[in-house]
Length: 379
Image (cartoon, rainbow, N blue to C red; front, side, top):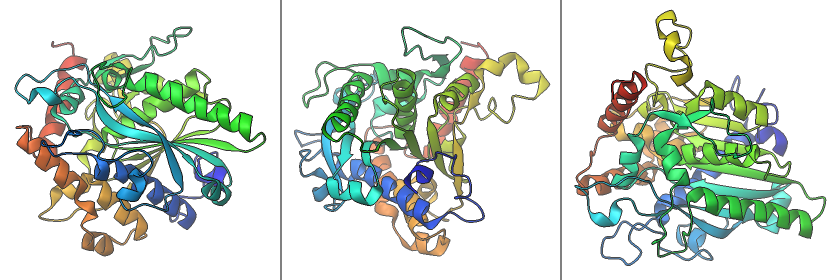
């Protein structure tokens, strides 16, 4: 049933009345593959790999405790927000940093999955420059296909900057923008599979947490818009992801056949942003019709979770908590017993040391305020 798990029917019959166990297990598995990005990310200022991956590609998954993950990493991916943060440490401002990896399923995993799976996994926001990019919440035309720029298709400018900006000084192989790196590697793997294993089914799976899910969706749209998926189904699994673009962006993703499953905790504020005032739910309000083209709209199908832990409010956005809840079958108590891997706690501790906010709601409020002011044309 791999095509159903990848969303060929928009997960019809797999989400209600309860999440199908096969889908639940697969989504949790992809969440763990995203979690590997956080576990391998080097937050030690004394390390020469500071703000990059701690390990080489061949052993990264093994080093983070996933030796049997069933994927071979073929490339690391770097992103460089086109923004500087003067008050922050220079090494974290406007520089290309490790954002995730591209991998392909092994022969054994391919037999289990029923197809060869090309995976791209993205972490969420960590560095101050990335937080600053998230504040750039105005919509701008994506214009990723020079032959068909579609000026009506608009996406958040900060996410687009992360996706398309390049840092040529990156020490660990991140030449070119995040987009350029991905458009070289993923089509290469798809073509390699077609050449070396003719007749074998291939899927492209993109998975990300928070800001990483925004990058995943941008790449899913880009790959399908350019036709570089070569007919392979393109599926995105989002964990605690924000909105990325407007209604025209959503419509084009639907038209291109991009499938997106959004795992969203109902208490997670990041999933409500940007566009807390101007979004898919408010487009019908007469007084807001003037800004219809500027209304943010979620893409895909939502898989809702319901979790909050008193005394640990940051857990509502923590990837480890998301995965624990999925694996527990929705049992809140079992998820609460897990520490969720402490992903967000570690990241927020790092950001706090960089003199950025240590509370996600503060960033969420700033993000939305910036979007509202820019949308209304006040700046």
